[in-house]
Image 1 (tube, rainbow, N blue to C red):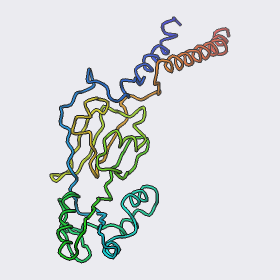
Image 2: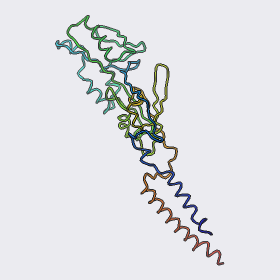
Image 3: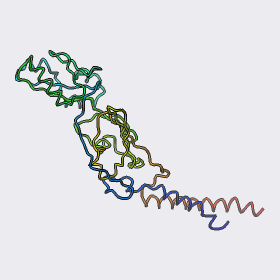
Length: 274
C-alpha cells in the first residue's frame, strides 16, 4: 500500500475537521460590519405597546383619602406581582386576583365607572382615561397603569421557553441573556423574530453579531415576539479553537496509525505468510 493511500483517510478527516471549526467571528457580538457581517440602516424605533384583547392591566389608584385607596386597591403593588409571576407557579391566580382582563370587546370593567374601552391604547392613554372617568365620582386621585402579562418566547437558545418582559424597553441582547444566550453552535447570522402585527404575522431575520444592530428595527423586543435561533449548517465534531483541532487531529491520527499497524502486523501479514 502506498503512503498516499495509507494516510489519505486522515488527511480527509483533517480537512473535514478544519471545515467544521467554529471561529470567534461566528460567535462574537458587536462586530463591525465587514465581509459577511452586514450593516443595518438607522431604523431603530420604540413605540409604546398598544393594549390588545387578552391583556391584563394592573391599575392602582392614589388618593389622600385612605378609604378611597382601600376601596380601589389590592394590597399588592405591581413590582411584587411581577416578581411573584416570575418566581412562583401561581401566575394565573395572581393575575386574575390583582389585574383587569381586556375582554373580546376591548374593554375592562372597573369599579364605580363600569366598562372602559382600552384596546389600541397605551398605558399612558389608559391612565388619562381612567383619571377622567374616576374624577366624575371621586376627587383628588391619580392612577397608575401597568400591562402585566407582556411576554416573549425563545426557541433554540440555551433555555428554550417563555419569559415575562421585566421592563418597558427590552433589547435583543437582554432577551437572549434571559434565555441563557445562544449556544456555541447556534447560528447568530440568521436569528429570526416572529412578530404579530395588525396586518398579520411577520418574520424578520437578522445577524445579531453586527454592531449596527443597536441602531436597527431589530434591537427592541415587542410583547409576544418569538425569537428563533437555528443551528449552524455545519456542526460535526464540535471543534471550537485551533488548539482543540490540533488535539483532536493528533489523537485521531495516533489512534489511526496504531490501528493500522495492529491490523497489518496481526491480520494482514499472517494471512500473506500462509
